[in-house]
Length: 276
Image 1: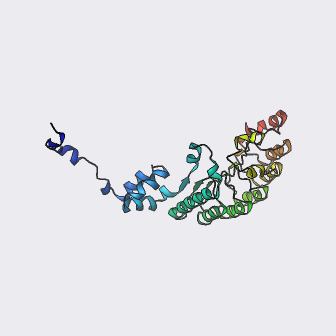
Image 2: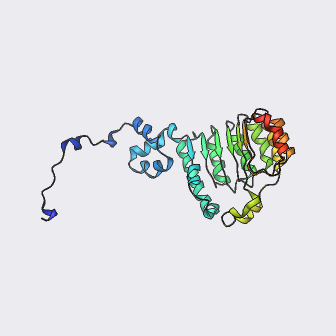
Image 3: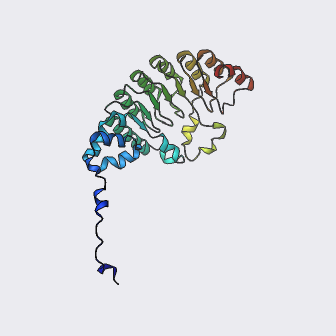
C-alpha cells in the first residue's frame, strides 16, 4: 500500500489543547525564564524570535546586569586568532552592545581580548561595576586602568592577568579610587616554559611581559590594604616583594603563589601565618 494514499491521522484533541502558548506569556514571566538562559542562548535564540521576546531580553536589570564571556574562552583551547586585531574588534563590538543593552546597569564584566576603547566605553557608562575581568587583553594600558578606577569606584574584584601593557604605574590609582576592592588577580604566563605559547601568542607579546614584579608588590602593599585575596601565579616576585605584601595587606585570607620560582621555602614559610 502506498503510504501517500493512507488517510490522514485524526488530530488528538487532548494534545492540541495542551500545547503551550509561549506567545501568550506575560512580560514578567518571559523575564524570569530568560534570566535563566546563558548569554549566547539569549542573544542567538530568544532575542530573535519576536519583538516581545526581544523586549523582555532588553528591559530587565535582572538579565542585563552581568556580561560573562569567560566560560566560552575556558571551553576552547587558546587560538592564535584570538590575538589578532580582527578578533579584538569582534569582542569590542559584543562588549559595547552588552553595555548598551544594560542601560549602564552592568555590575559584572568578564571578558578577554578587549581593547582600551571598549573598556573605557564600558567604564564611562557602568559606574556600578563591581567585578571586572579583562584577562589577555593585550591592548589595555595603564592609562585605561587609571580611567576605569576613577569611573568605577565600587569595584570589588579585578582580574588583570596576562595583560602585558599594564604595569605597577596604574596600581596606586586602583587602590586610591576603589577602596572596596577585595580580590586582585595578576597572573602571568609561565615564561620558564614559553614553548606552550609560541605559535599562538605573538612572540613580541610574550617577550614584552612586565618585569617590575616587586614594584607591583610594593604598589599593592601601599595602596590596597583591604584585599582579602591575591593571585600572583608565575610572578617573578622576590622574597622582598612578598614581605611587602605581607606587611601591607594584613587582611589577606588567600594568596596564590603557584609558579613563583624566585621564592624560597623560607619566604613562603614567613607568610603562612598571614593566610592561615
